[in-house]
Image 1 (cartoon, rainbow, N blue to C red):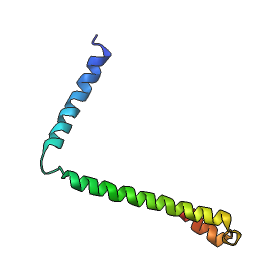
Image 2 (image 1 turned 30 degrees about the vertical axis):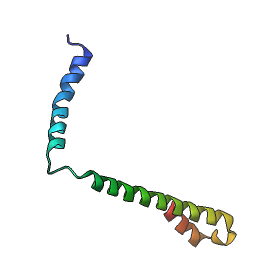
Image 3 (image 1 turned 135 degrees about the vertical axis):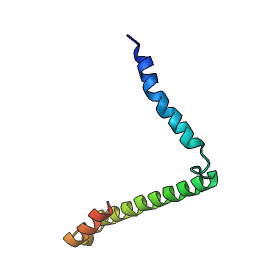
Length: 79
């Protein structure tokens, strides 16, 4: 009976070869500056969204006038 490592190796090898072929094609690859720009925009957007939601939550807790049912609906949409 073959050992476990051989079984795992035989299962994963075809997938790895297919992945390498997919990554090697030029039509699917993007320049590094495009990837960096997209990643920066996504990270910036996420950070701004989280900070905005935190500001809404903090303002609701600090200001009693914002604690009615209509404002709670807005707060639940932000979180």
